[in-house]
Image (tube, rainbow, N blue to C red; front, side, top):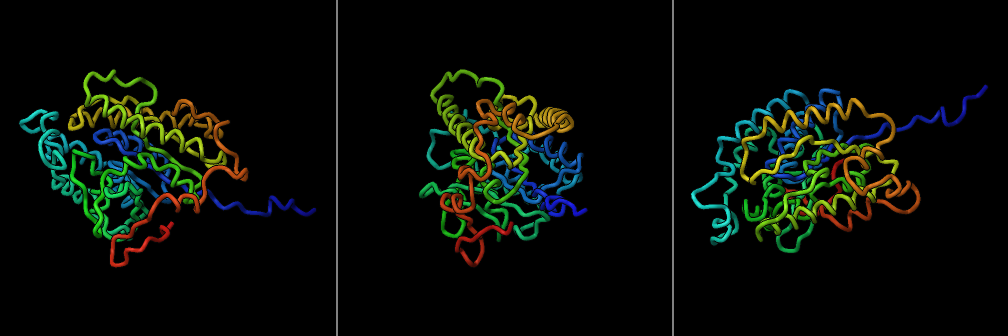
Length: 333
């Protein structure tokens, strides 16, 4: 008796993307999440990163193994006594009021990147990698996927007022979180069927009540990024598996406090390990649990004309090579 046609058709295995969000010094949480993933032999076919997620993402794309995760842990622990985000003599509020574009230079941040990421070009990484930055002139969401590696990561991590803009091919760029803090929608549009989201934001508890104008400014910036992420998740078709890893306890820290990395590793590793070991069935419930107000019914079904596609995302973003040819092109995924 002939076998049913559906049994003869071999499904193409789902490709997996890791998406790493911005988050400044909370980026240590992503290292704990990555450890949980590699311990379960979950490897990416591509990595997309924003801001500190670009730094962590490039490192895991260079070597997606436990050995690299351990190197990343050591690196984050060493930052407590580094000059990446020095406290300075003046309070942060006074530093923000002085002349200039940023409180700090990016010299020490560049040195940190070059210590952990041996590769110097996107093409040298073991896994395809992209990072996002915002064009300072027009706010365009710009993606880098080929050519020199370090400058685009610096641009993606150029937190406004903290680090200076980074010039690449005549354009000046700032923190990718300004335009796409958690680039999950891009991963979906690039055709990945399973997306692990390493987001360091706290969804399960309220933020402290703003007490100063600067607090309110920071809160508004956080709220805008949170809202974008929620909208993007709700627009991804249900047949794409989106797994939002829990960060565990996410402390509220001063932007330049790098003394809590060890506790964040352990928190994120424990929470993500328990989550991954306990998962079963489709991931709709995972999204609903991790991100309030995103329900299974909010997400479109495949083929209903909603959701994302390559054409729609190309209208929104640019893939900017960083070499001799500066014309935009499709990423090598």
